[in-house]
Length: 295
Image (cartoon, rainbow, N blue to C red; front, side):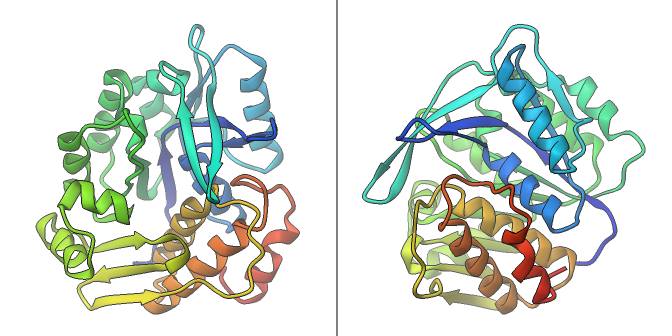
């Protein structure tokens, strides 16, 4: 797949509050969009923030990074999203607050912000569908957009329902999930289960992330798996999966072979594990990947 269109990213923007009290701008859709912007793909992020100082920080950070903010809506009632992050044995856990601004996406405004644009694909996670308003808005955006869908399964208890997540997977071309999520949705966590999941939902590819065991990609050519690079000094793993997703999308845009996509996605995810949080404002962080001819 190669295309000159822009990625369309729909979902939550929020602040991750780290164990030491540090606030880091995040949310899987923004994290993915942030990296795609650095990769030169000019994503349009559709989300919603609140009537608060945190919203000003979102706009300021996105504008400074050069991102298009025309898809960012401002709510008059509900606050900008916030998540408390805790680390247990190096793995993040998330306390996600209810009824945030991103739960109230305005479909009409979203579609208006898309007017005149050409979009290569639509990326969204599963959290944006936890409420009826944003779930309905996402459905309308999909109906409006004639582009393939990449769904990033992020099952955060209690904010998901099995049938709704499966339905979103069935409307996608690519799906990414981890071992636990595969077990919850497909009832099997082994490699045959990945291929069975792909065939059952008629997916072009399934990406399975496995923490320190690396990741695998199952597509029509078979299953390829790889472990992460060695010698990485891990600070935290927040945003590693989002980094992987961003590189997978970059690989789609440039028609990389599956093996190369997997290797590069793991390399970039490992690099993100060396920073606190999921995003970085130092463009030098991306320089070595650009020098390797990624974009």
